[in-house]
Image (cartoon, rainbow, N blue to C red; front, side, top):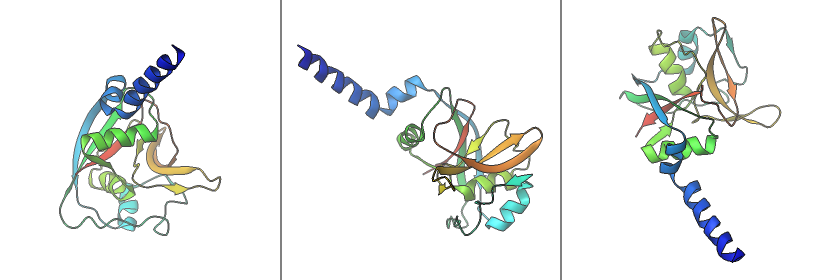
Length: 168
């Protein structure tokens, strides 16, 4: 009997873990705004963003701007209604046919849409670097008081975190 219960539990858990639809039921994906951008150069985008602080690890040495070409890229600003791990977010993005935006897109959205002043943290999960402690970090925009900063964020994000996703 215990073996049957264990097998049943394993099957149910594998369905829950593997199913984006189940995750979507637990954490509602909310779409907030759509942007259409053409990516520029990193120095140009950093300058245009007018950041009060930029993490010293966010440099052209650590990040290469992807070659998006002259065609505009459609980007969606989204968030979830509960805490999510990076793994779960990436699975849900894939189920929607999206890929996570990288640093180039994050900087370009802020540079091309000066009225885009996030109230909450906005993360670009498509770019990752390892900080001095060995932690994986993704670039994010965050407001401290009235100052906009560009810093790193690590795994696990609360319901007040937003993400940029690229339509494939």
